[in-house]
Length: 396
Length: 90
Image (cartoon, each protein chain N blue to C red):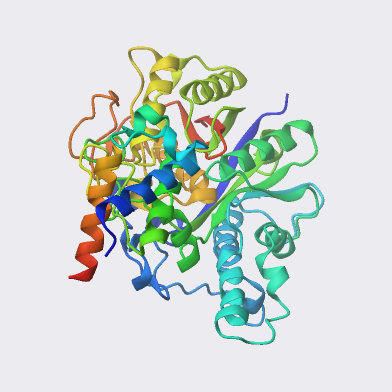
């Protein structure tokens, strides 16, 4: 089976507009959560989020009208990843893109509906359809970097990016591509996006405190993470710098409840990723948790981790208290936290932690980053719909 | 302002609709967990109460032990709705 490695990474998120800035924020334990600034935010009950503030995309102004923010974030993150990997301008038919997004161009839907319903306008921009379609971020990445092989978007709510990365790994293993840009992009922080989430009563009114006693729920974030997955032989042949290996992937479905998680589905996904990677639980030095900061997820995920790792699980942290829950992009932001662990030996902390919850008996790296050499990590994503996707990365 | 009895009748009707029961099957002192209302049923019932009475119910599913609004029993919900309607009039 072909081995797959990571040779580049890029990101835009509430913490920073690139990977070095995100690494620094993770190491400092900085939060990107703040007051929401978009139109009509004052009509929301929940007014905090991890927004990408003062956004200056730096993209071709002639093409900007074609790009919803979900595409803008993906293009900026993708450019950083491709530059880091040292790939050519036109990557060609052996290259592809698989991205995750949950809400796609939701702001474009919102603005168009506002125009015709609320403002009574007779028409909307002719670019509405190409802006809002879920595959827009992947297609624009393919156009920008000349990727003419397998290109698509997957959508599985909060597991979208992990599913995307898992499928990208499989495309390279299958021999269908040598290089895949993969990860996720999300731009759900708009009035309608937050209003929809409010109804579920799972958002925190102030901040995110994963696994902590006193946690009040999740905080939504925006952003994108794009990684370059590459066949190891291809990367070595061109002398690329290898950041980490994509060692395994596991996905399962709970087939139980549309919103409530089932720990056994999560545990099966972690076991599947370990088996695919040929790792034993004892070899895993860090888990980047799904860790949404809701009462139910953190309790269920803790039970699943204890089921897989027994009495001595490795350190587990949730970085969502820093970059927010970026929904369909979140797994890609968390993969960047995994790269920090594997390349720099720094475990990003779970910030906002106040006191241990007896229902979450884990070492969650509370509040302060930690130095630790780790050889293998897992990163979890568990979506509404009962969909679980877990990746295993190992040190290069 | 609706009377307590009127609020109670509406609360029971909304819970019955969520549970696919007849209102007469829901005792006036029923506990919510005993009725078997799941988490989505709960947020749907809260939405229906907000729509029916024109109120905003401060309920966070992550803080069941420290509720601003006791969504635990029919009398608890009735008292909470009554309080929110009164606050709105104030």
